[in-house]
Length: 130
Image 1: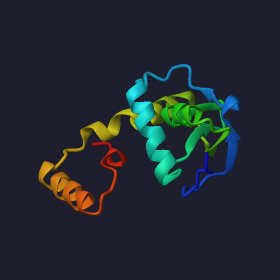
Image 2: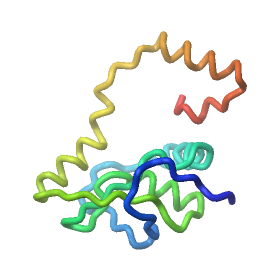
Image 3: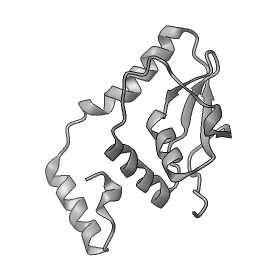
Image 4: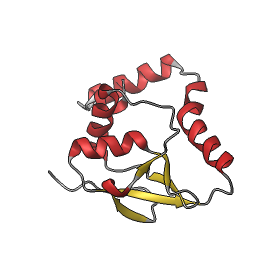
């Protein structure tokens, strides 16, 4: 497998086996989602790092990206370590990272326009998530 390019800011590359999933992460990542995420990472590289709390050492954001990396057979992922002053702040970020995008209102006409443009250049539409 070719090396995956890292485009995002990160503190270090961390071995995936050293990362500890947050035990209270409420999100489960279905196989189909992880497979699609792996395809996107393989094609576009790393655009977002895994976020790890300096306070607890737990992954606070990026559980799905870790699973995608494992599916790709990668040994390490880009990690950004962040300060959280309390367990409550960690929980809030964990929950918001999983939920906030769901509140966006998709403008389907614009989506259609973009997908049509991508079809014209023979772009793999799977990489858009649609």
